[in-house]
Image (cartoon, rainbow, N blue to C red):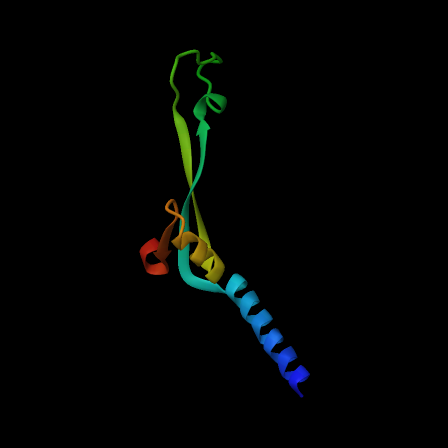
Length: 88
């Protein structure tokens, strides 16, 4: 009987972990993305840019939160947690 109870407990823990990692929540996580130098994407009259400095294109990543992602974002200073209402 005890062996059967242990299997049920392990199965419930396993299901709980899967739900924690996969179940989408009504929150979104905004994270910094990449920075790309526009010199590689833009040309003017076929000339190459030889000046110092650069213009960069930056991006932001927004992803749907799960319990695991929400927990990681909470401890990451660069991520921001937004409710669905705040995002929309």
